[in-house]
Length: 198
Image (cartoon, rainbow, N blue to C red):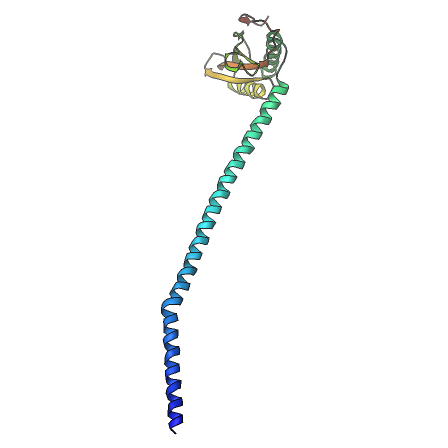
Protein backbone atom coordinates (compact mmCIF):
# COMPACT_ATOMS: atom_id res chain seq x y z
CA UNK A 1 0.00 0.00 0.00
CA UNK A 2 2.86 2.28 0.74
CA UNK A 3 4.12 1.68 -2.82
CA UNK A 4 0.78 2.80 -4.23
CA UNK A 5 0.90 6.00 -2.21
CA UNK A 6 4.42 6.73 -3.41
CA UNK A 7 3.38 6.04 -6.99
CA UNK A 8 0.41 8.38 -6.62
CA UNK A 9 2.67 11.02 -5.09
CA UNK A 10 5.11 10.74 -7.97
CA UNK A 11 2.29 11.04 -10.49
CA UNK A 12 0.98 14.08 -8.65
CA UNK A 13 4.36 15.75 -8.71
CA UNK A 14 4.84 14.83 -12.38
CA UNK A 15 1.40 16.22 -13.25
CA UNK A 16 2.16 19.39 -11.32
CA UNK A 17 5.47 19.75 -13.14
CA UNK A 18 3.79 19.28 -16.52
CA UNK A 19 1.14 21.84 -15.61
CA UNK A 20 3.85 24.26 -14.52
CA UNK A 21 5.71 23.65 -17.79
CA UNK A 22 2.55 24.21 -19.79
CA UNK A 23 1.95 27.42 -17.85
CA UNK A 24 5.49 28.60 -18.61
CA UNK A 25 4.99 27.81 -22.28
CA UNK A 26 1.70 29.70 -22.25
CA UNK A 27 3.30 32.66 -20.46
CA UNK A 28 6.52 32.96 -22.45
CA UNK A 29 6.45 31.04 -25.69
CA UNK A 30 2.89 31.62 -26.98
CA UNK A 31 3.02 35.45 -26.71
CA UNK A 32 6.38 35.39 -28.51
CA UNK A 33 4.93 33.22 -31.27
CA UNK A 34 1.86 35.44 -31.51
CA UNK A 35 4.01 38.58 -31.61
CA UNK A 36 6.23 37.04 -34.26
CA UNK A 37 3.19 36.16 -36.38
CA UNK A 38 1.81 39.71 -35.99
CA UNK A 39 5.19 41.14 -36.94
CA UNK A 40 5.33 38.93 -40.00
CA UNK A 41 1.83 40.05 -40.99
CA UNK A 42 2.83 43.72 -40.62
CA UNK A 43 5.96 43.11 -42.68
CA UNK A 44 3.90 41.42 -45.37
CA UNK A 45 1.44 44.33 -45.46
CA UNK A 46 4.29 46.86 -45.65
CA UNK A 47 6.01 44.88 -48.40
CA UNK A 48 2.77 44.72 -50.37
CA UNK A 49 2.29 48.47 -49.92
CA UNK A 50 5.82 49.15 -51.21
CA UNK A 51 5.22 46.81 -54.15
CA UNK A 52 1.91 48.52 -55.01
CA UNK A 53 3.62 51.93 -54.88
CA UNK A 54 6.44 50.73 -57.14
CA UNK A 55 3.94 49.24 -59.60
CA UNK A 56 2.02 52.53 -59.63
CA UNK A 57 5.22 54.51 -60.28
CA UNK A 58 6.18 52.05 -63.02
CA UNK A 59 2.76 52.48 -64.61
CA UNK A 60 3.21 56.27 -64.50
CA UNK A 61 6.63 55.96 -66.16
CA UNK A 62 5.16 53.70 -68.84
CA UNK A 63 2.39 56.21 -69.55
CA UNK A 64 4.98 59.00 -69.86
CA UNK A 65 7.08 56.84 -72.18
CA UNK A 66 4.00 56.11 -74.30
CA UNK A 67 3.23 59.85 -74.56
CA UNK A 68 6.83 60.57 -75.54
CA UNK A 69 6.71 57.89 -78.22
CA UNK A 70 3.40 59.23 -79.55
CA UNK A 71 4.80 62.77 -79.62
CA UNK A 72 7.96 61.55 -81.37
CA UNK A 73 5.86 59.73 -83.96
CA UNK A 74 3.77 62.85 -84.60
CA UNK A 75 6.91 64.95 -85.03
CA UNK A 76 8.30 62.43 -87.51
CA UNK A 77 5.02 62.49 -89.45
CA UNK A 78 4.99 66.30 -89.47
CA UNK A 79 8.58 66.46 -90.68
CA UNK A 80 7.83 63.88 -93.37
CA UNK A 81 4.93 65.93 -94.77
CA UNK A 82 6.50 69.33 -94.15
CA UNK A 83 7.26 71.31 -97.35
CA UNK A 84 10.91 71.42 -98.36
CA UNK A 85 10.61 74.00 -101.14
CA UNK A 86 11.36 77.68 -100.82
CA UNK A 87 9.13 80.27 -99.14
CA UNK A 88 7.51 81.17 -102.44
CA UNK A 89 6.38 77.58 -102.93
CA UNK A 90 4.85 77.56 -99.44
CA UNK A 91 3.05 80.85 -100.03
CA UNK A 92 1.71 79.59 -103.36
CA UNK A 93 0.42 76.37 -101.78
CA UNK A 94 -1.24 78.20 -98.88
CA UNK A 95 -2.80 80.79 -101.19
CA UNK A 96 -4.30 78.13 -103.46
CA UNK A 97 -5.67 76.22 -100.47
CA UNK A 98 -7.21 79.32 -98.89
CA UNK A 99 -8.96 80.51 -102.05
CA UNK A 100 -10.09 77.00 -102.97
CA UNK A 101 -11.70 76.44 -99.55
CA UNK A 102 -13.13 79.97 -99.53
CA UNK A 103 -14.84 79.32 -102.86
CA UNK A 104 -16.20 75.97 -101.68
CA UNK A 105 -17.49 77.51 -98.42
CA UNK A 106 -18.88 80.64 -100.14
CA UNK A 107 -16.80 83.16 -98.17
CA UNK A 108 -14.67 86.06 -99.43
CA UNK A 109 -10.99 86.65 -98.77
CA UNK A 110 -10.29 90.35 -99.35
CA UNK A 111 -6.53 89.93 -98.87
CA UNK A 112 -3.75 87.68 -97.64
CA UNK A 113 -0.59 89.03 -95.99
CA UNK A 114 2.65 87.09 -95.46
CA UNK A 115 5.10 87.90 -92.70
CA UNK A 116 8.87 87.58 -92.69
CA UNK A 117 10.23 83.99 -92.51
CA UNK A 118 11.58 83.35 -89.04
CA UNK A 119 14.05 80.73 -87.78
CA UNK A 120 14.85 82.29 -84.37
CA UNK A 121 12.83 79.78 -82.33
CA UNK A 122 14.03 76.70 -84.20
CA UNK A 123 17.58 77.29 -85.44
CA UNK A 124 18.75 73.83 -84.40
CA UNK A 125 15.84 72.02 -86.07
CA UNK A 126 16.06 73.49 -89.59
CA UNK A 127 12.39 74.53 -89.40
CA UNK A 128 11.25 77.97 -90.51
CA UNK A 129 7.98 79.67 -89.56
CA UNK A 130 5.93 82.05 -91.63
CA UNK A 131 2.95 84.03 -90.34
CA UNK A 132 0.01 84.37 -92.73
CA UNK A 133 -2.76 86.86 -92.01
CA UNK A 134 -6.08 86.99 -93.82
CA UNK A 135 -9.68 88.09 -93.40
CA UNK A 136 -12.65 85.91 -94.30
CA UNK A 137 -16.09 87.50 -94.77
CA UNK A 138 -19.41 85.68 -94.96
CA UNK A 139 -22.33 84.35 -92.97
CA UNK A 140 -21.47 82.52 -89.75
CA UNK A 141 -22.42 79.07 -91.07
CA UNK A 142 -20.10 79.45 -94.06
CA UNK A 143 -17.27 80.83 -91.94
CA UNK A 144 -17.54 77.82 -89.64
CA UNK A 145 -17.47 75.42 -92.59
CA UNK A 146 -14.45 77.28 -94.02
CA UNK A 147 -12.46 76.98 -90.76
CA UNK A 148 -13.31 73.29 -90.38
CA UNK A 149 -12.19 72.64 -93.94
CA UNK A 150 -9.00 74.63 -93.33
CA UNK A 151 -8.18 72.60 -90.22
CA UNK A 152 -8.51 69.37 -92.20
CA UNK A 153 -6.64 70.58 -95.27
CA UNK A 154 -3.34 68.93 -94.31
CA UNK A 155 -1.39 72.15 -94.78
CA UNK A 156 1.60 72.61 -92.40
CA UNK A 157 0.26 75.37 -90.18
CA UNK A 158 -1.38 76.10 -86.85
CA UNK A 159 -3.85 78.84 -85.98
CA UNK A 160 -2.04 81.57 -84.03
CA UNK A 161 -5.06 83.84 -83.50
CA UNK A 162 -8.70 83.98 -84.59
CA UNK A 163 -11.05 86.92 -84.07
CA UNK A 164 -14.69 87.14 -85.14
CA UNK A 165 -16.43 90.51 -85.65
CA UNK A 166 -19.78 91.50 -87.07
CA UNK A 167 -20.05 92.87 -90.57
CA UNK A 168 -22.92 93.81 -92.93
CA UNK A 169 -22.39 90.47 -94.67
CA UNK A 170 -22.71 88.44 -91.47
CA UNK A 171 -19.26 88.06 -89.97
CA UNK A 172 -15.63 89.10 -90.41
CA UNK A 173 -13.09 86.51 -89.38
CA UNK A 174 -9.54 87.80 -88.81
CA UNK A 175 -7.09 84.88 -88.76
CA UNK A 176 -3.34 84.55 -88.30
CA UNK A 177 -1.79 81.23 -89.28
CA UNK A 178 1.73 80.12 -88.49
CA UNK A 179 3.02 77.94 -91.31
CA UNK A 180 6.13 75.73 -91.18
CA UNK A 181 8.65 74.45 -93.67
CA UNK A 182 12.04 72.74 -93.66
CA UNK A 183 14.90 74.99 -94.69
CA UNK A 184 18.14 74.42 -96.54
CA UNK A 185 21.42 76.32 -96.62
CA UNK A 186 20.62 77.65 -100.10
CA UNK A 187 17.47 79.51 -98.98
CA UNK A 188 17.40 83.26 -99.29
CA UNK A 189 15.33 85.68 -97.23
CA UNK A 190 12.12 86.91 -98.81
CA UNK A 191 10.62 90.23 -97.84
CA UNK A 192 7.04 90.52 -96.54
CA UNK A 193 4.38 90.59 -99.23
CA UNK A 194 0.62 90.80 -99.53
CA UNK A 195 -1.86 89.59 -102.10
CA UNK A 196 -5.28 90.70 -103.17
CA UNK A 197 -7.55 88.60 -105.32
CA UNK A 198 -7.66 89.68 -108.94
